[in-house]
Amino acid sequence: MIQAVIFDMDGVVIDSEPLYQEAEERLFREYGVTIPAEDWNILRGGTEEHFYQVAQERYGIAEPLDALQVKGRQYVMSVFSKKLDFHHGFQEIISTLQEHFRLGLVTSTARDLFQWIDDKLGISRYFPEVITAGMTANSKPHPEPYLEMMRRLEVSPTQTAVVEDSITGIQSALAAGAWTIALTGSISLEDLPSTHRVIHSLKELSPEFFENLTSAPQS
Image (cartoon, rainbow, N blue to C red; front, side, top):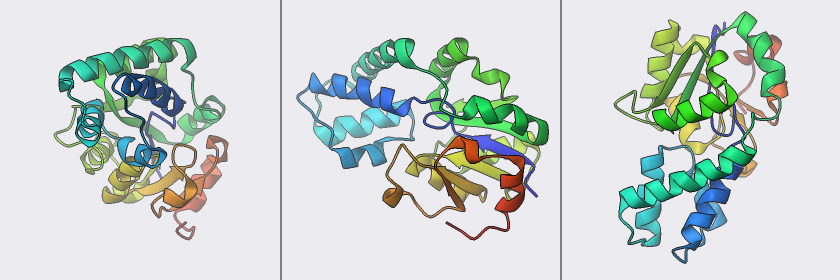
């Protein structure tokens, strides 16, 4: 029986992935770089530092990593300050889930940026436990962030469902042994790894959904 539901943040709780892409495309245009559409699948879901390190190496950007990251953060926060909001359907379902399950949030977003987002949207009022980048020795796709959240919520992997939207995040949740639900939208359906369930809207999540999850065939 599912006792805990753990959410990823970017692309699941908040509708941030298109905004990250908007800011990052603007940044990389300054260096004459256009990121191919297929590369976003491998760039999404990791830590901010990992994103810029991979991008710097992949596209041959000479800017020092720390300077690139600072500039990128400025662009991201500029876009977020104007457009960031909860993902469609999140606020409609979260109160009901709070009544039935222990909830946690596991994000690869840095702690200071999470705090800035939280001040703007009040995300932490929905989640008694939050793990951000740097709070575990290993980041997604390693299972440690999700295993640590399970420890905090005092549940086993078989009692835990995870809602993710990125390849990196899905790999982390599966490696942790959790029942893994993939939310479409951030990456194409054909690129999603095999998971226990695939949903197209957060509104599909309900107590009944999770009751049936453990008996459902793998998607």
